[in-house]
Length: 215
Image (cartoon, rainbow, N blue to C red; front, side):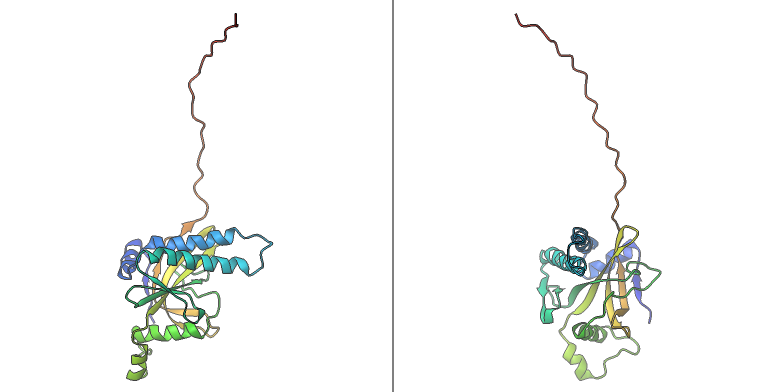
């Protein structure tokens, strides 16, 4: 199956606009997750950094999209953010090293449960592809009215950058990780180390202070 890939900035911006989104609201969420993780120490529980990074990304994404009328949906304890029309939902997941790269195809880093699998079935019903057509008209009717779920994949790369993409999943691999994508919208990478800035003290004028002995 050929995945629709938006790897250049113009194509990505147009694809996001079609969904009522822009790059900044997604990258802000990705950055917030990284900062939450970076503030953890060795004294936190081992699983906490990954969990808090995911949780903060979800919160900040919801905060940003709430201003546009998007609402939160926690059905079956699966946090998604749904657009005002109820046609598009976004969830957040940690992506593999291939996240945000046009030369490779990513997966989620963890296996997904029945709730995600159900959402992928809805996605397949909405985006018919060869071999993925609805089994019956009745089955298609059951999925009508449910939102298509996109995944904001976030990866904290070892080369000091955050890579992210908004992608439309269709299926999972044998290990339960989401690995088949209908469409991928790559976001610009966020470098974690800024350019060095030279700090120069301001030049002050010389001041002569007259000192007189008191009478």
